Image 1 (cartoon, one colour):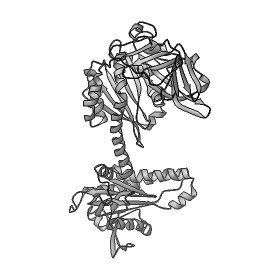
Image 2 (cartoon, one colour; image 1 turned 120 degrees about the vertical axis):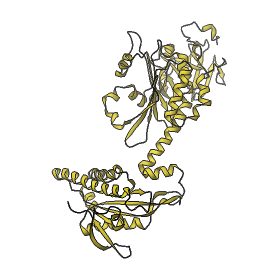
Image 3 (cartoon, one colour; image 1 turned 30 degrees about the vertical axis):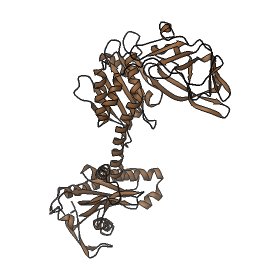
Image 4 (cartoon, one colour; image 1 turned 120 degrees about the horizontal axis):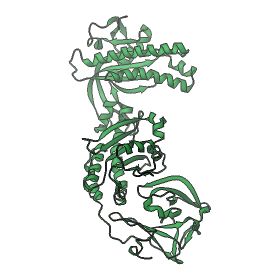
Length: 533
């Protein structure tokens, strides 16, 4: 093979200082075999040399057995080479997925490999040069050039405590190294029923990184569909657009907006997590010429490791979100704090709030599954929504029931504010169901009927179950008693019933409904209700 330096001025070579990317002609006849078949055979091979990477053979497409290649929908992105399309090699019943790739519309820095195809060295069974087998993968023997971002990644990046901190550090590291960075934006997708992603934005001269949330609804909007974000999330690769000059490619509306703000270069690249999830990193420059190949190469080199750091922060955030969503905010935080063993927990004092949907069996039988789920979710929106809006914690959904608590910090407090909020939540839930039923009556949909029980007492709040399947919940006699009070709403034909222990916390607002026997509870209990308006 001819020396790289002697070919640096040839059209097939593009060498750069700092981060080295060059293409040189190999005068030998190179052949690649898979499962006994020659899949590529050429004397016009180009060899790509890239900093700290093994050299790669690129074959002219006409010297490749395309009948052995099956194109798939996999893509990768390089900010200075472009988007790579992939093929699966298939010979008989044997195949190697994503073993061949090509930059079909490469960026200027790599335009010489257009219409060339490369192969994964490990996927090919036999490599030959001039009919002599190559037993070892070629290595780039050139001296590796220092990457200032590697030093930051190794020594400082791990200190960050969140994605927001890491975005700040990464942006600062680039500007310190002389990168012409004007704006950096990171989109990280979330496991959240309400949010599609969280976006972090660093912009030069701003005091801090901003953070905003994107709902799932954005995926249905025209603005998203016409953005580079949609292309990246769909796995189609990335975007590089130079915004200077009269021939700038402005195929996304955001690019025209950036030009008006003085941008000269725009890059959107996928940030891939270990589970395959695609996130997005965008870089914008406002300096003449934008980002150099050296700078993009240095970013590209650290991107896999950087993505793992972002992934660790995203996983922690997703874990906290999922725990809050499925366990409730208080229980979720306790689990995150380490209360994960069976028996872990604490004694608390709280107002208990439980509700049950009436005639749910009849509703389920007389409606389609979709309609019944819609009814059930409307019911939960009113009930659990009222609890959350008034600062309570929804512990669990038990079929068509909701169990919630309003924690009381001082058990000796006679009129805790938590009880007033619990009562207000019950009244608000009743008003919301009335509004829903008015709509149902007009549409001929079955009305929703319910009962709510309120009580106050001591609880054990923690993990119960088996060592392999735990539930973080509340247990104690107070839980049984509030459930019995709710059941009494059927007998007394009242929507909301309240224990005497709870009623003492909200004096002069309730009326006594007499003493009643509660199933499984010793003695009679005085029960209260809300006076009729």
